[in-house]
Amino acid sequence: MSQETIVITEEKVHPDAVALLKGYRLCYTGARFTQEDLTALVRREQPVGILFRYGRITEQVLLASQKLRVIGRHGVGMDAIDREAAKRLDIQAIAAVGSNSQAVAELALCLILACARHISWLDRRMHEGHWDKQSYQGFELSGAMLGVVGCGSIGARVVRFAQAIGMRVMVCDPYLQVDQLPEGVQKVELEELLTSSDVVSLHCPLDESTRNMLDAHRLDLLRKGAIVVNTARAGILDEVAMRKKLQAHELYLGLDCFVDEPIDTESPWTETPNAILTPHIGGTTNGGLRGMAVGAARSILSVLER
Image (cartoon, rainbow, N blue to C red):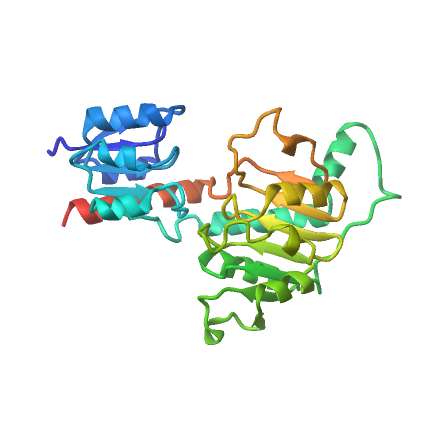
């Protein structure tokens, strides 16, 4: 049995992934660690692979092991990996594409529904002993326009969910050809999508073309009362500009990812109205966790077993 090591940046990982990697010694970072801890661990253990969930894979981490050949991402977002350094060092970085698509799409739909019906506000008021039936009015989604930014594996699922409840849909995706559009969906530019949508759901990766894509100017294009949902990556929307819109009660927001994670009691988000916040758990379901872990393990083995 090989005694080569794989570092896992987590306290534990799904047992099906552990079974796949049974020929390797698995070394876990634990639940809490610093970048310095990770670098020191990689330097000490000299792993051939890293199953990466938490932290950041910097050039310093990559250089710490002379044996490192592959990083298997526990998920699909690759912005926390220095891919340029990895490429230069001939270390493959592979996402578990499609592994959590259903889970993230379900959360996006959940946030859309919760914003439209003010669920978190109603729940809090009910727990405080209030009965707001007379003053309450929700927003009916059937017939409303959903704008999906990024129509890959996750976005396409959100499109199907939305159509199932009677929403009209338009998408903005520069990589999607017109003949690849789901039936009944039109492709438009971002500005048209923002001005025409009652709900906007973000499903694009974070890169230089999408960083701060929803800045103050583009947020001004949205209709008053529009819903924005981001289950993609932090940094796609300008958080400061968005909070100003929320504090003015001009928009509603469902948000699962934050520039500074984790948030705490000092975070400005804790006092922001009209926002439903979740702690970056889009893929964290039984199926999503298994899919991401197994996908990452298979990515690692695809390189190590060549």
